[in-house]
Image 1 (tube, rainbow, N blue to C red):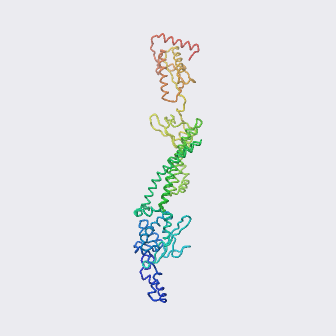
Image 2 (image 1 turned 30 degrees about the horizontal axis):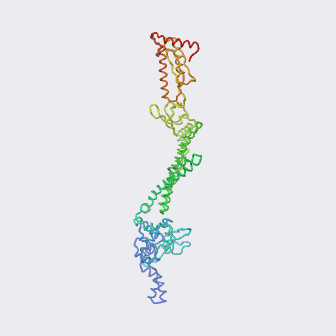
Image 3 (image 1 turned 90 degrees about the horizontal axis):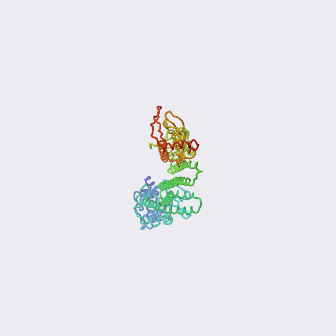
Length: 570
């Protein structure tokens, strides 16, 4: 019996009679028994919410915590008829308590969701409650709602039911204020007339109407974010067109995608706040909003780095070669820093202790430095390459024993595409400390063949070949006119050697080979016209076959020899 009285679920009628015995004895002195019970019954106890009928067994109102938890649970399941039993409807006529109880319970739930979430665990679990400063005896404060700088307190009150004994309900004074609070902080007509199944179905702590409103808010937020984002970008471009500094265009272009994420996160935060989510759900929604903002920040920084690098390339002059050499490394470094910072912030948002991670990295820094010696060497090699700029992407180079076209220069290595179409990866530390030959950096390509004439050629024929080859080089438009020479170099083991030295003014290897081919054909024609033979290698020499006499050739050779004697070589 004592246990039932403590929980307030069932109390035998003789308990109420025993509690009233002193009052009956006192009243006996002032009147007959019928008059006594007529006076004592109203003062003893009134039936709580008589218009609702008998309370179902699942209604538990034995202490403040139990009563508030039961009310919230019934509302969460959409059972507002059941939640009405937790309200003190003494100010409502009994015949209207069923209709008004459910309506008031729904309004109170929606008001609490939008203003303050009540945690029943913070309330007293004592049947008589726990005394609070400024709160009358027999009452417990459950929430304080502020409306237009006016604070309204909501209370639970202890009552005595003749059939149930002691029960806790939301006080009659608080119930009388529900309509006023809902009018100021509720959802208006929509909250009163929404179908009941929207409240009866719950998933992951959210009622169905909250899920639908959340999805609708996300969709509308996405549309609004795109429209507002385009409008903001148009205004940014117009404002940027009025200033001479063009870097603001870079920032506006970088915001094209991320701005929508910022606006979408803001819309999600507004919708979540408007829905009055539970603390756990609100924590998740707020984390999602922050992650969206961080995503937008990271995206903006990456786009800003790329667009700024493109702007630097467009505005850089020939004197900014060093700056352009550092640019690819600077871009990668800036992107890496941005990704790391945004990643650390995201870890902090989802609840991971970033300071502990950084402290652990600090303790392992020394071991990491020893373990990453080669990596650090390659990183410093990358910095050296960016500063010295021995080559650029697309150059044809020789690095050590490898020759190919530079395809990429990374933080750790440089990649070459060889003539065999293989990809060779060379650590930047090796590149920085080794020999690098850049063929693409030359302004002209050397042409240096040696012509070997067979022994048996006359002096006049050798002189003719030398002079005609000199004339050929002098007349060719692609032969550099500076350091150019053709000389009878000496007597070889099996040939008379004529050395040709000049430079072809081109950087394109394919064009160079075409020009060399033309020159080789012309030199072969000169040797053939002079009546000479190209020597074959070997110490045995070459037995020249005599050719028939050609008057034109002999006159040309004699004229060349005469010019040489007069010092009129081409």
